[in-house]
Every structure is written in structure tokens, then in C-alpha cells.
Image (tube, rainbow, N blue to C red; front, side):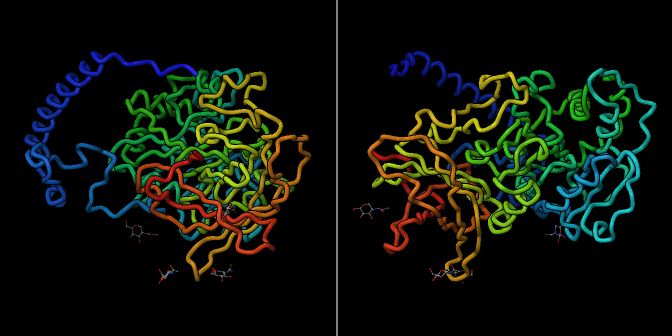
Length: 495
Ligand SMILES: *[C@@H]1O[C@H](CO)[C@@H](O)[C@H](O)[C@H]1NC(C)=O
Ligand SMILES: *[C@@H]1O[C@H](CO)[C@@H](O)[C@H](O)[C@H]1NC(C)=O
Ligand SMILES: *[C@@H]1O[C@H](CO)[C@@H](O)[C@H](O)[C@H]1NC(C)=O
Ligand SMILES: *[C@@H]1O[C@H](CO)[C@@H](O)[C@H](O)[C@H]1NC(C)=O
């Protein structure tokens, strides 16, 4: 290991004096803002801390310091404030509509599916389980010159404007997605609650492929992962989008066209790590087992990747994920890492999805990286083509993970805790000569966790897990784990 490079002391002092200068300049400019506004919100005034001289003198309304904080008098954003715009096509509709049914709640959600042409009359039940179907406006007058793409990109790009023109009331956000996007609605609401819907916001995520991001843009929200556009921004966009689209006939898709218009308006992408385009092939396991410390908002490319649980089809696999989602959506697929010290095992929990046991003690910095169970979107691209760090599935054959997939989830009303059960997925394992207990003797894992709907109201931090002592000899094949907020001074360490 190399020594940490020493930072010369002079650098520190330069930085400190720069900081003082910046603070001074900020002080002047904030004073000017609050003076010229002549408006200080009473609620915020009483909330102002009197602890420092600076703060009590400044009296800056909080939301001018941080535009992400909503004005306190407005009710919090909830699902009714969102209008979904789902891009679909008639030919894939009979199959893709089943993905929408998985997450759509007709009694609570508002939105439309935008199709290229009418679809055959659906069975009556369908009508009540899906958003309203609409046919997109005619786009034959728009130029499209990308040799690889499809003209329908223009139609799909205009969904946000067409949704706006419906003139629906009490709309704060338009959320765009594909017919193969699965939204975790509660978490979408949680993310949007952080932002002031009265301002211009363009929220979404990048691709998992560095090359895709270079080819399209790192500044672009990928449509399949979901794009949230605040109402006033949609209003501004609607006025210019048709002209804007005509300026970019060479672009490939709908989302790069949208980004081109955002660039003209001057609104950057607000990146949120829970929107998943999933431009990968193979198994999402590695990505879902080490999710970033951010709430899971969407899953996409459901037809491209393998089902998220083995031995079942894609729809049933997502249905399984819905059970823990309904019990504790904020905690869904959140990772926690702990050690079984007696047996020298590392345990990684992805709550509501899977648990892994590894022989040996691996550090948190290793375990928080997604294992490359997936392949790059560009099949020839190796691991240097992901815009985030990954790790191999195992570095030594003894460290092959023992994977336990969710099999059951309940809420125990006498303890107010969820109990999720995970069962070992039996696979061929390499021979291992390490002298330590073999995890294969554990067939089942029970995870106890108190639902924590306010998890994301706090600064992001991984939950902690603890291996509990089995309460009887009979349970030798079952490991019991507790997951929750970390105790004071609790960190992932062994020695
Ligand atoms: C959502 O907020 C509105 C206020 O804007 C309120 O009237 C409505 O009851 C809320 N809906 C839900 C489902 O909480
Ligand atoms: C709920 O918890 C109590 C107390 O630990 C336990 O006795 C009971 O068996 C649990 N119920 C279920 C359904 O797991
Ligand atoms: C469970 O929740 C209920 C309602 O919030 C509360 O009255 C009860 O004391 C809780 N029980 C435990 C064991 O925490
Ligand atoms: C580990 O071993 C110690 C000493 O034998 C025992 O007290 C403890 O309960 C064990 N821990 C677990 C999680 O089994």
C-alpha cells in the first residue's frame, strides 16, 4: 500500500483564506437578496437559528438558500400531483401492458399511455387496470434523419407537451416512462418531494453504459429509466418543443431530443441515482444487490435483462418484489453489510430482494460495489466502460457468494417489524480449502426490520445489519439478521 500523499500545509491555508473570501462574498450577496426581496417568510423567520451572529443578522428565507426546499405552506407532493406519460406502440402492447399493470394504481394515479395507433379492444378488465389510452398527434410533418433510429422518437418526445395540453388540474410533475418501465411510486414521490415543483426541474438518471452516455449525453435523462419534468418547465417546453425538435432531425431518440430542448431552455439534468435505465444485458443481480444509497425509483429494459428472480418469468419476478415494496418501500433493495465473526463470513443484505454470504471478511468498500453479473450494453466493452465502479463476482473461488433470494415477506403486528425470508439458491460451487464453516449449511435467512418510511428524510446512510444469535439448536440451518438504523458508533468493522 502506498502512503497517503501529504497535502502541503500551504494548500490548506490557501483554501482557508479562499473560504473566508467566499463566505464574505456570499454574505454580501445574500444580504442583497434578502434586502431587495423585502419579503421574509414568517415561518422561516421563527425557524431561524439564533445560535450564530451571522444567521440572526441575515434572515434569509431558507428556500432562497436552497431552492430544493419547498415553501412550507404548500402540502407535500403526493401521487395525485403526478401525471404519467407512458410511451407505447401498438405492436408490443399486448405483451408490454402487463408490465404497466404491475405498478399502475388506477384509483390513485393519473396518466396516459400514448400509442402510435389504436389497439384491439381489450378485455373489459384491462380497461380498469391501465391508464387511459391515447393516440399521439400526427408527426409526419417533422423531419427525422437518423439512419439508425426510428421516426417514432419524435412522437414519443412530444408526449410531455401533449400531456401538458390536456390541461389537467393540480399537476406538479409530468413523469415520462416506457411501457417496459416499472415504477416504485412511493419512492418516486419521495424523490420529487425534495424539489420545488414551482421551479424548473428536469430529473432522471444516466445510462449504465459509459459509451451510451458519450454517444447520447451525460446531460440527458434516459427515458426508459423515467424522466420527471416540473409543471412550469413542461409549460415552457410545450411552447417551444415543436420548433426545437425541427432543429435536431439527426438525433436518434426521444430523450436526446428532449435534452436538446432542455439545453436551449438552459435547464440541466438533476441526477437521481434511483432511476434505472438498465442499459445492460444478463442479470441485474449485481446492481440490485449493491444499490446506491438512494431510494429505488424505477427499473427498465425488463424484456432485455433476465428475470430478477431465478426460475420464474419476468412478470412473476416483479410481482415478488412488490410484496416487500408494499411493506417498506423506502427500504427496498437497500444494502447493509455485516460479519458473522464466529464463522468469518461476510453478509450482504439487499432488503426485500436477496442476501449473500461470502467466506472470509471483505471490506465495506468492496461489498458496496456491484458485482459484474451483468454484461455491457455494447457486448465488446469491458468493465472500463461502466460509469461507476464494479467488482468481479468473486476474486477467489472460496469467495463465491451463497445467494439467498426472497421467498416470503410478512409484517408482524406484535413486534411492528417486517420479517423477510430468503432461501438458498442452489448452484454448483467450486471446491474450497479454506478452513472455515461452509455457508451451504445455512438454508434460510430471516431478516427482521422495522419499516422506516422516513429513511430518506435524513442524510443518506446505509442501514446496519447484525447477525442475531439463533435462539434454538433446531434453527441451525437458519440465520437470523436484524436490519435497521445504525447505532451510535456502529460501523462495518471486525477489528
Ligand atoms: C395529495 O395532496 C392534496 C393537496 O394538494 C390533498 O388534497 C390530497 O388529499 C392528497 N392525496 C393523497 C393521496 O394524499
Ligand atoms: C411475531 O413476533 C412474535 C414475538 O416475537 C412471535 O411470537 C410471533 O410468532 C411472530 N409472528 C409471526 C407471524 O411471525
Ligand atoms: C406497535 O405499534 C403500535 C401502533 O403504533 C404501538 O401502539 C405498539 O406499542 C407498537 N408495539 C411495539 C412492540 O413496538
Ligand atoms: C459467537 O460465539 C460466541 C462465543 O461462543 C457466542 O456467545 C455468540 O453468541 C456467537 N454469536 C453468534 C452470532 O452465533
